[in-house]
Length: 188
Image 1: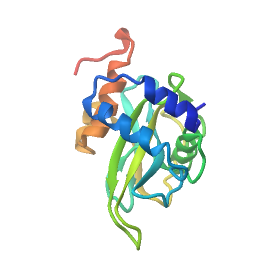
Image 2: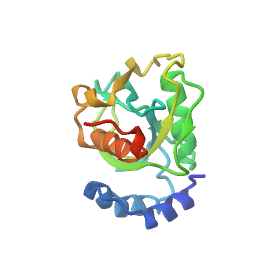
Image 3: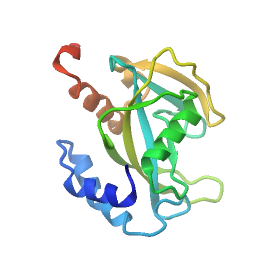
């Protein structure tokens, strides 16, 4: 579904109203020409996959409090050589939340982002080229906090800025709300 070649093809066709995302496309395409870009030791950056998990009404999002980064984030992580980045996003989402049943919204990725990762334990600062997928889960699913996190919870979309006010996360919220059918929208 989202192999290296299909990712390249979809990025070449991608049109977005978000300027920061438009600026990421050429950088993603350049990175994808490099053989080791799906390996976590590839510098100055590598591909990651993440899951923006919402409830069926798209009023809440499932976020983890990342242990080492100490921030509320969507579940995600390193491809570790798997060139199907969708598999990465699903694997990481299940590992970090315990939710087994996840449903992809649409037929491809939802958002892209490039963000800096600080130096830690003899590994230099680098960038994550994150491919994000919009997924739906039942809010009643049993949740399990992973070893990588200190907390895990459903956060109301209208309270998201209290947990994470980074533009890349708020863009995910805004895109989720703008993609709702008209009857599913709530006033903001």
